[in-house]
Image (cartoon, rainbow, N blue to C red; front, side, top):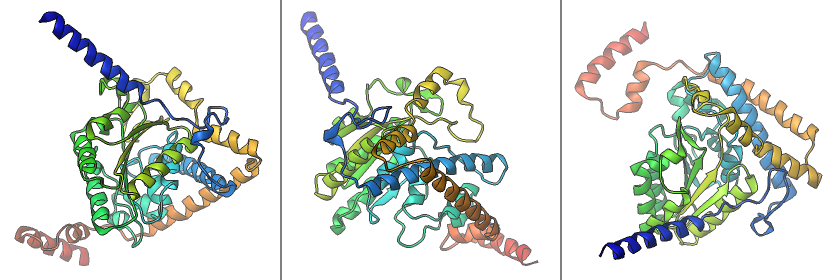
Length: 371
């Protein structure tokens, strides 16, 4: 009996190893901007490639300026994005306007490129209610602060799309820490059971604030967690915009063809702190690790690729940089000009019918505000 149990245990471990080996990282461009996987190369025109690069450069400048604005006290909550441009922007670039984005708090760039005005993104950071008043026709919801809660919401939105017969998808983002939450498993399981047209992107930047991914799960990959939900799982080089675009484009095709959801793990890295709210990454990351990932910078490798094709140069990049700076200047000015938020604004936006005790408080505040 002991021998049989031992053999069963050995077989189980072997099976686990076989599952892990199935999830090899998909890459199109290596660190030198060379194509290493023609089969996964997406069908993009030169103009589309230039546009994707422009968005990545623009967003890197936006990140730098947002950090400066935060330090000046002109922005509130901010989660840096440098290093994750390929994962964020190439995935959004593979979407259509009618697709719905359910972001985490680091995923404001996807919202902006999907149509959210930049000044409203700044107001969101300040906690102003107008930052959460999404314009008509912009299919995003406000960034989710609760880790992983957007996964369940995305499953619900996707199911609604399926019931309406819409040829669109719901895409949601979380980090490796979010993949350790109960909501994550519930969301992908629900979407899988109902073949909802959803795309779940886990941006594995290696640290859930300060906890290394290796201490969060014994699974060798996050992609393999899709197996339990009965849905496809893909791991891609999240510093490679073409690999990310290709994976999301294929996942979208599967979804709108009624084949159900896909889980995509993007291997990426955030160069800055988890947020600007006092996190010090030097306490849990080494300079050697930072240097290793900076060599994989998505802007550097994509720039090399485009330059070799003769469709990108320093002049084009500087034009994008100057446009980003000007747009940011105008957007922060517009955010500064927004009416100051009042206590009564919060109460009016929170309740359709206020409880009696709040009605009394509302009357008091309304009187004070009128003076």
